[in-house]
Length: 147
Image 1 (spheres, helix red, strand yellow):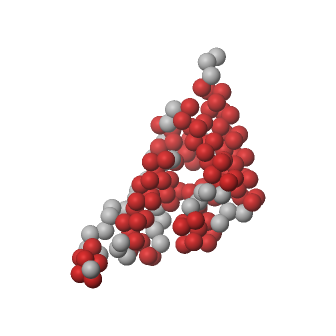
Image 2: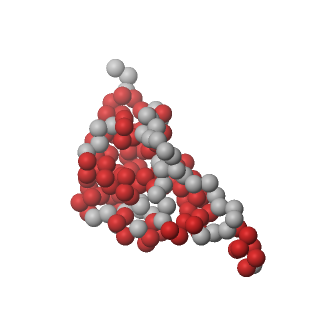
Image 3: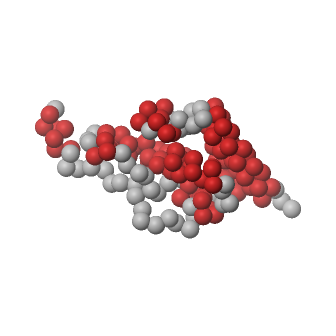
C-alpha cells in the first residue's frame, strides 16, 4: 500500500488551469455586480470554471484525484467558463439552481467549506447571489418565450 502511495505521487491528474479567460465566461458576458462577482470568483469558480486556484494539499496524492473528481463533476453541472454557449433555457435553469443552492446552503459543498473558511457564505452574501441569479434568470425566461 505504501509503495502504491509513493508511486502515484509521480502521476498527478491534470490541473484545471487556464492562462486566459474565454470570451464565453459568465463574468465577461453578464453585467455582474462587483459584490456578486467577488463571491462567484472566490467561492464558486474553483469548481465551476476553467481556472481552479489549488490549495497546498492538492499536491498530495490521492487528494489531488479527489479534487479533480469534484472539479470535473462541478463543471458537468455548471461551467461558468462556458456560460455563453448555453441556451437561454439552460441559463434560466442554471440560475434557478444557483439561487436555490445558496439559499438552501447545499452550495458550496461542506467539504469545500471545511478547507476554505472564506467560502462560508453569510446570509447577506447568499441573498446577494440569489437575488442576482433570480433577476438575471428573468432575462433568460423572457428570451425563451416566443415574441
